[in-house]
Image (cartoon, each protein chain N blue to C red):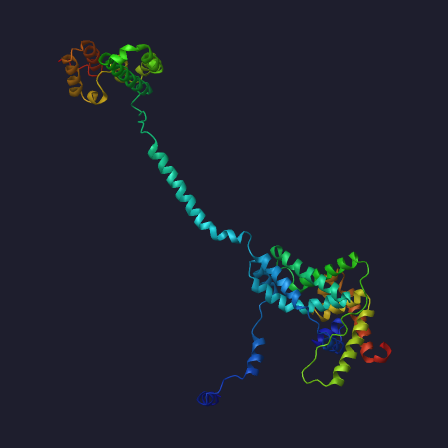
Length: 211
Length: 211
């Protein structure tokens, strides 16, 4: 091994290829979300930027699929982060940051629904699909259809089941954390998640029935 | 991960299908707005005033110091009565000053015809001084008699001072200079003054004997 390294040095070859370096980067331990929030509380804006970059996409998708309306999701998304910013002074490391964040998001969603009675049910987000480079048009079309099926199945789910599924998939919360966020117990959360998963699985397996 | 899913009611296939289609992200203008808000919230209040704090503090310190120095230098030096000097002495000293002023005035009246032309005006102008002098002379014996029980020689001096103050304090500082002053008064044919000063001298220096 030493001989190999010395040979590499003598040939002036780089020790790591760019691909290796990009692979090595995620191995660096990440700062905990709570620590970032505490740093932001003490005035470190860069900590908030990192925290925001970590969670913005999943919070946005959570709200988008719950509300099923882009404008509403954007409004609530801003409100959620506004509340996080406002809560920085009183933030304590008592629970996992994601639990805190999604509890705020869940409460904002509930407030929005109460305020607007019934939000628009048309799925305005269902045409979006990220294109992978070099992907064939047939595959893209197939993915788009799968997305539409899944979105439709998600939209059909009762609100509590959809909430539990999204908290599980987007936020990566455990059953206990889902129960804490939604204000229910573990068994109820587990039941909701199980029903939601079963319905979505059926929608994926039998696409003809959903169309 | 799969263990977690099996235990908690998730499904790997559903998760993969969801991950494959869920790629929405918040719009860039939302990121900008939220990060701007976060920066504004983290910035300390009145930050623009912070740059002025130090110069203002220096200016205030220098200004106050100058004011104190000017105040101290402009104040007339007044000797405070010491523990050995009774309060009546201070009053008597003031009376002595007034008497000297009166003597000078009388002397000037004798020398200058303008003074004799309108003596009533001079008397009017000196009226407040005369009144203060009378008050001091009335006060002097009372104060001196109070102090007599505490310090007999000091009281004697005070009593003598109340009547005779023709020799100044410098002359009274020592027995020799005081006697010189008395002799000078005698030379000046001021027998009354010399007599009063001698009485005062004998009260202070009873053992000195008459020269």
